[in-house]
Amino acid sequence: MDTKNAIRDFITHEMLRHALETPLGDDDQLVESGIIDSLGVMTLLSFLEERYALQISGDDLIPDNFSSISSIASLVEMRRTS
Image 1 (cartoon, rainbow, N blue to C red):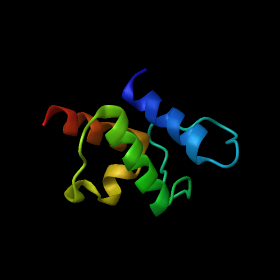
Image 2 (image 1 turned 90 degrees about the vertical axis):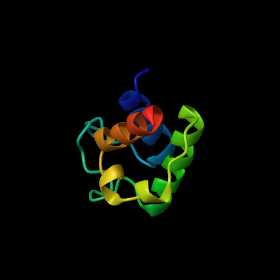
Image 3 (image 1 turned 45 degrees about the vertical axis):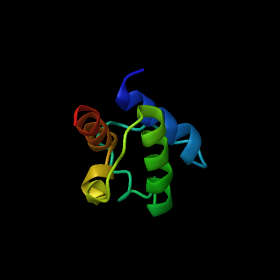
Image 4 (image 1 turned 120 degrees about the horizontal axis):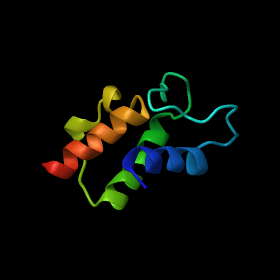
């Protein structure tokens, strides 16, 4: 499973308390739309660090990095190559 689909699957199955009418898109705004909140970001962060065996630093904890599935996947790819 590619990174975007793994992130989408985690958010959909582990974080959402209700079914969405349409599947999450790569560029849907997760925080702005209320899909995830600050606690959700921390839960997602733990998932990413465990699944991809990487360390995400405090400098990476900016809203832009967690705004969409695409931005989260970009952060993961950046951390995997550094």
